[in-house]
Amino acid sequence: GVRSGVLTRTVYCIKARRFYLVLAVMLSVAVAGIVVAFATPRKERAVPPPSTSTGGNSVPNRAPPASQSRSDYLRSIIVGSKVTAEDALYDDESPQGRAFGWLLDDDSVSLYGGGERYEPGIVAIGGDNSADIGKSAVLIRYALAILYYSTTTAHRDESFDFEETAVAASPSDTRWVRSDLWLSSTTVCKWYGITCYGQYNEVGNPIFTSSVHPASSKDFGLAHSSGPVLISLNLTTNGLDGHVPPELFTGLGPSLRILDLGSNNLSGSIPSEIGHADSIDKLYLGSNPRLSGTIPRTLGTVSHLQYLYLNDCQLSGPIPSELGHLTRLRGLGLHGNVLSGLVPESLNKLKELYVLYLDENALEGVIPGLSDLTNLADLRLRDNKFEGHLPALPKRLQLVYLDNNFLTGSLPSSYGYMPFLTELHIHHNMIESTLPRSFGNLEDLTILYLDHNRFSSSVPSSFAKLTDLKALYLSDNSITGTIEPIVNMTDLEHLRLSNNAFSGTLGGDLGNSLFKLEDLYLDHNSIHGHIPATLGALSRLRNLRLEGNALTGKVPGRVCGLTSDLLQNFVTDCLSEVECRCCTACA
Image 1 (cartoon, rainbow, N blue to C red):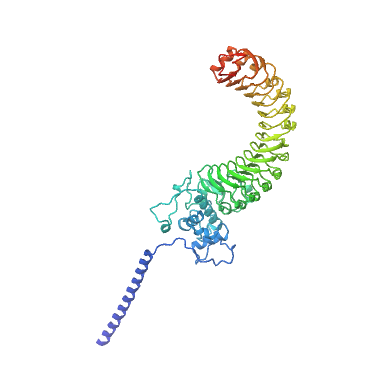
Image 2: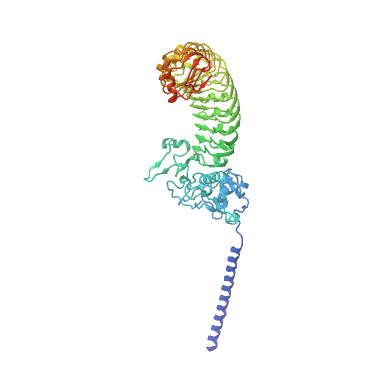
């Protein structure tokens, strides 16, 4: 019995020793693993093995299998959607690589939690507590991150090893004027400059912009949206400095309606991928003085466009005829560039066009007839190289700027039958004709600039009906007759008739009716007689030019009294025929 008990204890001790030996070995291996893990440098975003997907169009829109990493999931969406080439994702210096790195390392939004609960203001775009932001939201967050990294001058913190720690540039380091919540893990609907369809205010009511209403949401696939959809990106006057990334047009999805990046410092060219953004109806890239290149022909496929403004940049080349396909267009602003060539005839197809600005370019040739643009109200073609006759114009025009070109021929009498016309600018051309009597019909006309042409004959008596006219410039022509029809224009503030062949006298009526005059230029004509004292009633006069005529006698004291008020520029022939003690200059 004793031997049996001893044997039993011996066996127990041997087993215990074996257990502790195995336990010691396991602890040693674990400690060694921890040491190795801390000692081995971290490799960020290593290029994954080739995708095992069966095709480029196989893009997951649900939670991936457990075996698929976050990197694989993001890469399969971005590359599979053909938004960015795969190589660019692993270039840490490129905006695409930095955006991919942000999604992978710094954006804490859950990509595939697997839940089915949708929360207004969160799920469709991704954000706080979102269960599954899905393919479209990944692309939107990726595209916006690329825009940020493409247009900032944020610097890395030199105290960190960027490759070791993946420290991304902070929004606080950017030149953007405002970057509230950009590159945060909140829904992009809360990022500065972004508006979403389906956002809710503090009391739970839906927020809609002026351009998107629930009744029209079905046109853009929004009617059955499970959450907010990005419809507007407005970063105008916000200090953006850099290139416009192509991903902006391929990644923001089919719901984007408004894109406004105007009045920044964008450079490079407009990507041809802009043609993919078919849902945009308002596109503003104007007032970016370093934006260059040509206007992409692919713009002609953005069929929902209503307003297109690419003004005040350095765009060159011709106006693409494809813009004639934009039949919903209401406003087209290409002014202030260096565009050349002819105005395409296809623009006459834009029946909805209300505003057409092509001024301040190098366009040439004959201006095509625009009479089919029956809704056109504002036409500006000034400061180009246009030749030939003045074009036929639609009757609903309110503003017409055709000045500073090389236009010839006569001034069409049909221009006098545009009942809504308020401004007509045709100065600095080579128009040779008489002044049309039909212009007396333009009762709403406030500005008429016909100076620096070759008009002849006298001012028609019908011009006396233009009682709303505030500015009349007829200088540098060959106009004859008296100024009598002009005396009835009682709202005139600026009257310039210099360098013509006007005759007759000044008369007393001039000072008794044109009380609002600030500028009166009658120099270098054939006006004779004395300077009437009634001119002293024109108390608002700042400029009075009477030299180069046949005036004689002494300037009345009442007129001289104007120089103690507002009159600062008073010139007569006081070196010869006129006696003037108050003139600011003598001719």
